[in-house]
Image (cartoon, rainbow over all chains, first blue to last red; front, side):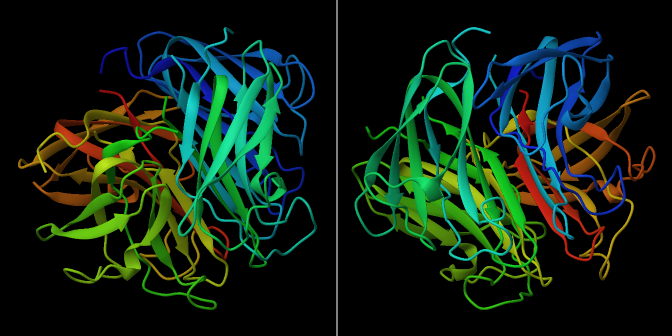
Length: 125
Length: 125
Length: 125
Length: 125
């Protein structure tokens, strides 16, 4: 496998962390995830910028994904420069110094039975 | 981030607003959403045209998405030139003067436990 | 809107009509759908070929989608040249004489609460 | 249908087999699936490599998909060179000697009502 699996910029237009959850934490906590695959031979320096409906973008959030590893980033866990607000619409742009693949997923456990969604993010570059 | 995040024309072939809902409004109301990210430095002038099974297309529905903002447009809320019928199959084409990213989602709460779907829309141009 | 919205060949690798359902028919019957948008000025002559795990492909199933219309085709309803078997894995290739957009969805109501999935099909040509 | 339906390398950044299930096996067992369509005239020799968060990649897992057939591969069933761990994040890269189409799905039955997700995998080459 060579180092060209994926793209260096991705966008996720849908983002929303439900404010409520049912079931045992952390696996059943409502969450929003960016699953990142770095199949290259170098650490991916990933920067996430969040866009909102009514204020300026926030970021970058910096994340390293080691070479030949995957990292499933929960937006719930991002806290630098600031936590991601719950029950708030957002979108994200994800940039990397090496090609990566990004897939977006959500687990929604606001009601007693969970719901899931997932889609490959949009490859910008 | 430059102004070239996304495309200027998108299509969503699946569209259907369930006519029934369970749970508190508005968050648990069954809805169909086009999540739009405008990462550019200019206001996006967005025009949505709806296609139906058995009558001529309706639109355009005009929506502004400010520069560097996201807007999660509920088809439920569109009412000019006319409301979007419930329990009716439709599709949509979404055009913009600047590049945007569009993701399609639905929350279906016809039954007591919600279901979700989401996919990046098809980039036409 | 010109006639070049979409592609002329699409593939859906996932296909499966659950054999059981709960809730009132037809809206809560478990179903697999190919949502087709024809934004062109001509009738789309669509041909669907089904692929299976252990026998030769079946088709084509022929469907017309009028100009500037959408049609949400339930695989459950296809019966010429033969019905689509339930509880059986399949895949599909969808060809058209004019560009179309195809999105794949499933409603699964085998249990008392429905589940949904959706994704834009893969644009082959 | 010619032999050029799809691509020869695909990536799925999201992977996770839930460790628990409810309902009758095998149809209601929580599972993660790569649905593969081989519309070509030749057997597809498919090789899957799994990526993890904290250890080296594992693989290849070798799978044949006969000509003009589909195969819905459950990651649950992969066991050579080793089984896929449950409740563990992973990602996958799927390579083939002939063009194929890959779609990723999950059925999650950890709670009494199932949830579904699906997306076309990312076409790398």
